[in-house]
Amino acid sequence: MYSEDFQKSRYLIIMDNIKDRIEKGDFNPGERLPSEPELAKQFKVSRSTIREALRALEQENIVTKKHGIGTFVKAKPLYTSGIEELFSVTDLILRGGHTPGTRLIFSEYKTANAEEKEIFNLKDDEKILLVKRIRTSNQEPLVYCIDKIPAHLLPEGCTLDRESIFNFLEDKAEVKIDCATTNIETINGLPEISENLKCDVKTPLLVLKQSHFDEKTRLVLYSINYFRSNNFSFNVFRKRLK
Amino acid sequence: MYSEDFQKSRYLIIMDNIKDRIEKGDFNPGERLPSEPELAKQFKVSRSTIREALRALEQENIVTKKHGIGTFVKAKPLYTSGIEELFSVTDLILRGGHTPGTRLIFSEYKTANAEEKEIFNLKDDEKILLVKRIRTSNQEPLVYCIDKIPAHLLPEGCTLDRESIFNFLEDKAEVKIDCATTNIETINGLPEISENLKCDVKTPLLVLKQSHFDEKTRLVLYSINYFRSNNFSFNVFRKRLK
DNA sequence: ACGGATTTGTTCGTATGTATA
DNA sequence: CTATACATACGAACAAATCCG
Image 1 (cartoon, chains in turn blue, purple, yellow, orange):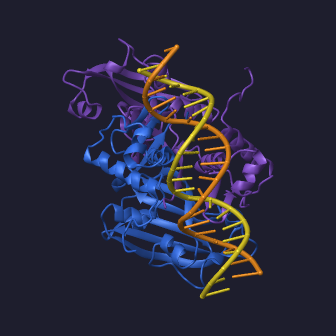
Image 2 (cartoon, each protein chain N blue to C red):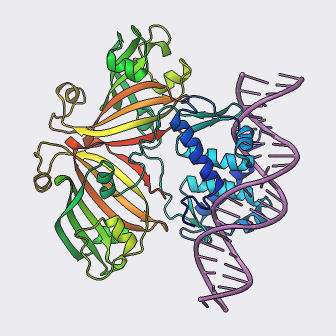
């Protein structure tokens, strides 16, 4: 009952096992793994289960399969887990080993304008919550965030002044953010924003405009994040199709 | 013999069929698809084959599955084709419906320095080809590219002055670029680069530093691209894990 | 709160197809 | 041509999540 991988599915256990063996150097980068029937024998499971495990490993970019040849360990542990994985700014800072903080600039309910009604698919007179905050990493300002959320998704009168919006939406509003489309661009510093970020107007800013969707692909959060570009950059893992 | 999807696997055919029906409005965004056993009956295949098709559709972000509930059509065809798909600058321009061009600034073989030997895993005295080019879109400069390739991957004495490096490596050097890790940041304009891009030094530049790997995860191309940020931005599709 | 029906998730075993060496 | 390896497909059984009466 209190065991951790109690009733974890076999393919997940096998997956972890293979990961560990790669980590340990049992299987080395570039090397071929034992064939599927071979692994099936070793783990005493059917080949289907092995295939499931290998498929998952391939999806995590840890191995590649080649038809008629074999399954190979990818070189560098390419889990750069870059920007293609969606996480909140809070998580971003935590993963960097720093302490996240929030400074509220502005929080107000307002009637949605035409564009907002369009993107959130709202009826007349519906309101949205507009929040402007500075997110800090170890007390230092890192990013200026503007967030917009339809009011009907939120409990009455909350202002989102402290918490991670992701966590708040999940815990208190039962909205699970599933994915986002992000546009990345860069602009020159802007007076209000640069001042709040304590950086020079001459320092360019990295701008992420993000439309966040829940599992039903409803747009639930639109945010614009201005990052101090002198202490920030993003990684993306890009894969060729075909 | 001459039919196009002759011997295409069944799950791919089913996948296309379901895609078409979503396209046509047969299945609408947010709606539940027929259950797996139901689809199996319709297509006269086993449930496993249906699951394979649905899995592929899920991977393309066209449907989502929920345990114990069903499989649902995602809303907007969330154009996946952002920066997470790796393509050459040439393709990038072509996809925008413009005409790509190249202006050679510099092309020379040089002995790899310590850092380059490290990243490319080279022995002493090995050389790399260093190329600096301006890529143009409809004759207008768009991006300043610095590319580094180990000499041993290339035929003797080529300078890569005209072609797409991706195409050249595939056609002439038998090197297939498979994936890349990309770092995105922004910097202030630099004298040499801004001048070549015909933009003001005050215009910030979007910088993509990319390590390109082949199928064996060998680093085969390292490139730094400086984009004129005033006419460029990227999209990324970000997915939440778990 | 319980139970049964429905739906997806996991696993098995087997057979056949296709790519590569 | 043959052996090996991965890919696709079938059908069956049971598990786990969800829903509804």
